[in-house]
Length: 422
RNA sequence: GUGGGUGUAGCUCAGGGGUUAGAGCACCCGGUUGUGGCCCGGGAGGCCGCCGGUUCAAAUCCGGUCAUCCACCCCA
Image (cartoon, rainbow, N blue to C red; front, side, top):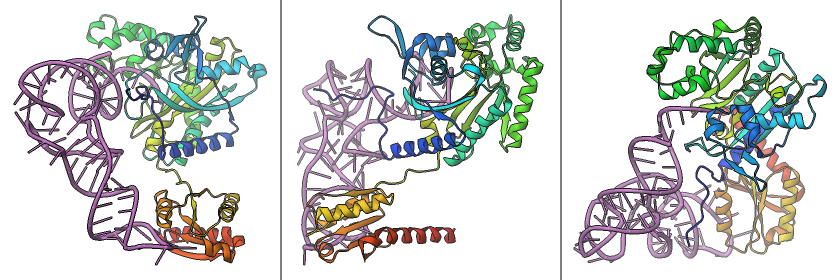
């Protein structure tokens, strides 16, 4: 019988990585909620049609990377490859966009794309995303960028770049697309096969081509900048001013066009050393396109795996304290110490096994616990606990009532030491 | 989807046709009867990714396959 394994590109996230993920999730939720974003739980499965109509039938994501299947009634369903489409669908379906009210939401969960796996890229991966519905002010575009920047700083991501562009609206983009087709007519044979295909399906994407030869040819192409309509240009200008005002250092990149069809207006990408860790932008026609009321919107999504790869923060080890039952100790008395510490907010692990003391302490150290509470016959008889600090290799007898205080005092002293040392 | 690298102990890796496959770290037991790290002694742990081929003989060579990593493509 062969061992059963996980599916290619789909993995278990185990400690300590899982601890870091959990921490990042908490950090993001806290920041988003501080801006009034409300959490939404979205389904992982949707009708395939949703993604075809939002992301775009011709995009790589929909045309070759979706996990699609038929349900028992023959309907085509897909595992979601991203979150925005579901978010928009949910807002419409729950009638949350009636009457021009602004709604801000965030979500978190697994996405699925059938791609070749690599580090930081899996077939099941996690995204943290937010969306703002009902605002057509550049200030809301700026806000989501500010929130994204806050996430980066809270996760201690070093050396990142925020790239921005405006892909224009439904009024000006077609004209630009036409210009490109015109400029490249007759040169179709000189560009790469991918670009040739994109020319008709997703014209603007060719600007993003990495092929040297193509780049050479596209260098002389008219710039999208010159074809943006006045309102797009004004909007983009206001957006940039707001970013500047908020102290967000950005880089303009005219080639930034994004792979999803629904973007209109400002878009951005957040690049760290490991690559793109977040991206987003404005999508003013998607809601109506999916059958909802005309509603301007914008949002972004972080890739959790990639954010974790670039994050400077680390998971806090668990447990913080370890209750070691020593010879002659009583479980009841030991558990009382555990409760006292848990009530004070500490993570506490008890052991119930009858094992040599040295084994217990070794285990506590291996788990990176800072504290051990020794509970043996002496403690039970004397009505105290022995509190051991592993870092200092010191221990003291502590009255149950003073247990929390003893730890807090030490930790405070420890923090002060760190500050004076640095 | 295309091209390439790598799969040997829990981890990092050595061995490159010939008996019982190795190291460091980690792990377990003992030297300590209530004390982790350091030291000393002992020990356990491997279908050498999987399937097939060549050969008297394969962890070693060849083919395939699966997994993983890298570069593309694409994207978070």
